[in-house]
Length: 243
Image 1 (cartoon, rainbow, N blue to C red):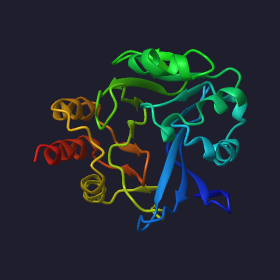
Image 2 (image 1 turned 90 degrees about the vertical axis):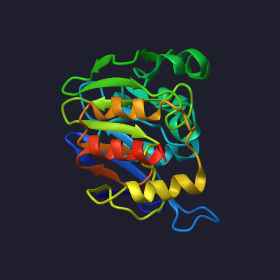
Image 3 (image 1 turned 90 degrees about the horizontal axis):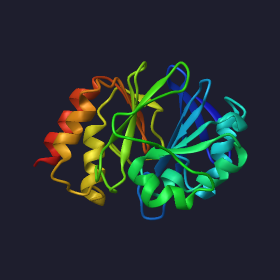
């Protein structure tokens, strides 16, 4: 792990081949143990960052990206859904990376991104593939899972890395960048406390769609990234949500 900002503790670590987790730990008043915000940077011919981080964290995330590649090389600024930690600094990234475009699902582009962003979105339909060069990404619509109509995720086909956003959110500010330990228990404890899932009746069906991709690494937006049998873990989450 490389610390890119000593004051904030922002750090970066490769969690799959040429896929880097950028992490900033934070302490909130009233939240025991703190929290963390992650972004995922894919180094390739057309580099991509998934999640921008909140707008006020932009200098920290930019500094971390710059430790791997010149920020102006970024081609895609990707997001799962509309929320401050997903796309709060979208326009700041578009400003420093002049060849970049927002990347999102078709619903997000239609209802929000093409109005909020300073440049039009590259919108992906459910199942659509996008090549970055050595990496190939497929967009998967997951409306209301865990929340937001426009929600969706990206699976990187070669490394089998699922960029799964707010699924498996773990509390805590001092967690390993990548773990093979249980994250379902901690994430379920966090979900029951915060109740941030939408309670969609199609959760099992969509989790099965994600499981069918056979992920081996899960890029969580909050907490550790995880390595193991991702299909098994996603199906275990479906069982928990059915209770």
